[in-house]
Amino acid sequence: MQSPSKNYHTSNPEVTSAIDRDAPSHPVAQGLDEDDYFRSHAAPSYLSEVEAQVDQFVEHHIKTGKRIVLVTSGGTTVPLENNTVRFIDNFSAGTRGATSAEYFLENGYAVIFLHREFSLLPYSRHYSHTTNCFLDYMVEKDDKVEINPKIADEMLVVLRKYTQAKSSMSLLPIPFTTVNQYLYTLRSISEILKKIEDKALFYLAAAVSDFFLPSSRLPKHKIQAQPSGKLIVDLEAVPKFLRRLVDSWAPQAMIVSFKLETDNSILIKKATEALRRYHHQLVIGNLLQTRKKEVVFVTPNGDESWIRLTDDQDSSNAEIESIIIPAVIQEHDKWTVKWKAEKEPSN
Image 1 (cartoon, rainbow, N blue to C red):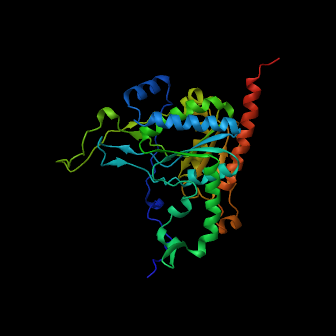
Image 2 (cartoon, one colour):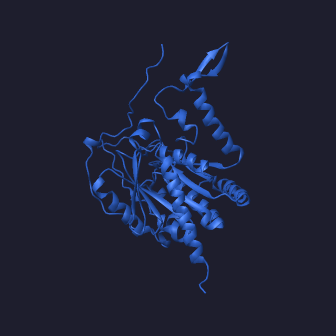
Image 3 (cartoon, helix red, strand yellow):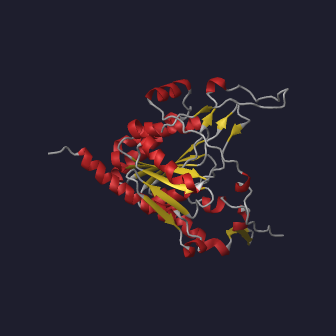
């Protein structure tokens, strides 16, 4: 019996049951915050290996002349124990990041894909992010496994794109799981990307935790049941390192951040506030309910530009990232011209 096709996702939030709570924004991280955080939290044991891979990748594309985009994708976890059984997570599957990475590759960029481990990846996302069984893509014929003829042509197109990205060494996947791993890896990659100056683009689509439990207060083992029947966890705000990225880690690069809201009336305001606080080049605002159909570009000069799928595009399953990425690249072109003009000494 063939498994029935599913047209629903249990991960979609019930927006009608949400409680709206306003909270003040966290302070922008300063140099002392950076020093304190990285002094009090240990680097991932594998970080030097990642740095060597990224450095080799960047050196290779200095020779090819390609621009390099760092795409961050997926959600960070907040461990509640050192030997982690329980952790805080968010709903991000990495759809925006993985999809965007493909379109950056198609537009001639090399991509460092800093992603949540086991979240969606470029190209394989077409077959892993589904409520149907992966085995439905295959059939048995003459005692051998073959691709289901119904999707073979489509899969061939995806395979060729993946093979091209791989053979040209244009895609470097780097995983993270915890917010600490993400912050350390982001800082290291940023420092390496300094050497290509304005050819670097940061596309920060990861859903980074707002709160965490400092390592100094992590229990070593699994938290046991409490006599009160309650578990109260005192979390601290994750330092907002975007300003440090702009001012110190990668000052020549163009930086794109995302602002996800559920209330349309505050989306532009929040995007504008982010630009004012962090001094970067572009915020892409989107609403949870419509993020796959429309986004808005907000720039420091106050421009607002909506990008929407047409009804025809929506009905044909077009991906909004196919429109977003060329528009981001146009903004990168503008940034490069501006940065080079500011770099040249005035006569």
